[in-house]
Image (cartoon, rainbow, N blue to C red):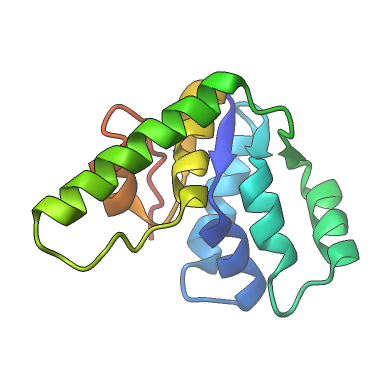
Length: 141
């Protein structure tokens, strides 16, 4: 079973946040059931982490066996655009502030939906709302 990882998983580990131990435990379980992957937007966001250099990111991925799924199918881009449009329409109709999410979030969800089997994220509410059919791997504290 292929598991896609959200950026917040990597940044939580690198920043030593409270969920780090639970995330590491989840990653150990997941790597036994199949490959761990990140989408190109997650890779690009990881390169912006304040405590990790580009070389540090590459080393981390190599050591952990996490691969970057650089080949995003056309369907991923199309699905991300559709979901982003639906999100923007909901935001405008609710009289809320303008859309606050960025396209990268929708690319992460579309990649997980179409090119992986599940997503490991700390942003469960966002993905349940915008990708209700996407399987999310639970992180047990």
